[in-house]
Length: 382
Image (cartoon, rainbow, N blue to C red; front, top):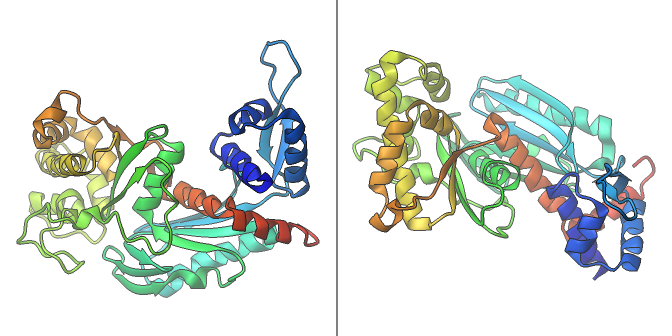
């Protein structure tokens, strides 16, 4: 029972930075006497600390604010994009304490070597405080392996070489899935019971989340919305299927509409032409394809909100008229009176990295994860 209360308190403190001790005790349902013991245990385990809260102006005993312990657990996270990678280390509550980044040419070996070198630097700096490692990668990811990433031209690339330390939990997943998790945890979709997140970069991915959804794990293969047959069946996709929605909403679609060659970097190609007045009609074609597909998924899944990340948010901002008309026309009639709201992602390009941090902490803040941390925190130097 004590362990369950501790996990609840830590989860609350992570999700809501600035939470006071009084609020946490009230929400978890601890007596004042029991709370003293629980917070003492958390401090002794280097999991949670307290600092004076700002004066509220109310009468009564001053409370404290719950914060990450200065020697507490950290998550190292990496996000791989089509042209660059980002990495960070973050503590409880999501505060970032170290960053690294670099460009790449999509060659698997050198790209992974650069990312692994950044993680080794983090390891030298923070030692065994790193309690989990999480990696967000484009494409289909299972068991820590990128089975297929069409935009990188990767197949069966093992990500475990980034962190060859089996004693520390390692999780890898699709970048769009992690971005959706981040928006539901800390972004534009926070507070909604069910969320459909769609993320366009080089291709389209996403995730559907309902209240209390477990964190994504290495075996998840859902959310490949971009490979639903919402597109032109005459077009072959790199995934092996025909008519994928992917092909209708990113830079490849824009190039076709403009009569240009297929770009090597679809995401950058699209972004560079968002302000081009001669591309307005073509951008409207993409926005309509995005709106129709979003409506179809709303009809099927019934989310409370749709969040759009990456180039999807840019299309919405550039051609809201085209998106909204197609979205409304695709909704079932009874939905049109009160359509599910569509919002732009708040975290932007950082969504997959923030999501990786969140997924990593979801591993740390479990019963087994906390037991592992307690054993690790007893080591000298932690």
